[in-house]
Length: 343
Image (tube, rainbow, N blue to C red; front, top):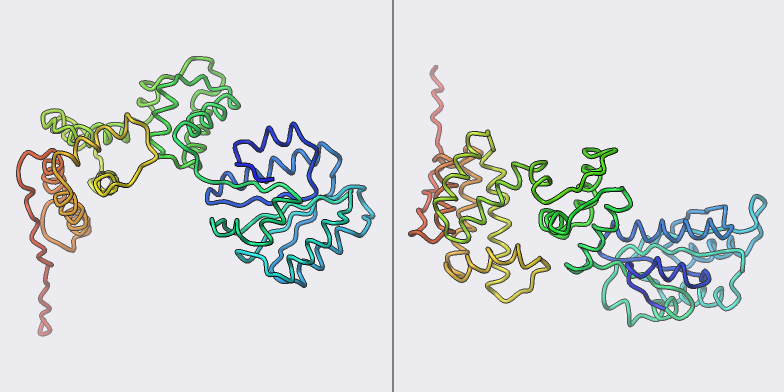
């Protein structure tokens, strides 16, 4: 059978252990945690010895499965963690695995960690074999609703009391990156260690003041609110915020605007989509492309490759997003130096 990673816990709870588990996907944190969940459940069922091996060729599979069929001197039940060094399994290796699964040793459990996962794998003979004889766990990026549920569950495990708006704020700030969400929850766990107070989005923003203020600055530009944009920019400048950090955030938002403008779908909450939609509808695709090029020029200014003041250029870039007037073009004048060989 095939199951998504967010259903694995229920599958492990409701069903007997399968002789084979295959875990793979594009989200590495989910792949890691899914594997850990299977190992934990196996230990509960008496699989005390864990044998780790790497497999790629038929000889590797022969060796691993021969070991699985052999009795152990140290434990009655063993879990074999097999890490694939290649993306798929050839026919000869698939035949060996099929032969083993037809008479799988009851005291051996196989956990195969795939290197990658691609949609075309579903049509491969080895993948169909794994789905038929075992459990295939596919670890794909979570949807927006699944992400907020994941954050809520993880916060509850850390005894953090997050409000709904705080959960959405974490999802927005980490942009769907599970590893970043995990790190943010760990940081909050340390910051509010032993506290039972409820953490709202406002308290969360106080913990992430500079990042939140930068998002507010860009949102103001997206909505065309130049007054709020100017105040936020001056505040960040006084606090010593580096222009380079703002350029990175602005460039990321421009890339998302570009994706929306060409019809791509973004996995973001409506609260984060609204400013992007407002901006790209107002300034259009060609202006977005021009502004993306300006980000490259400003980065070069900050590094001293091009002449100009990075802060003034960031301000002009934000005005361009706000759509107040034409975006000033930064002249790409590379600084030149004269060497006096007679000195």
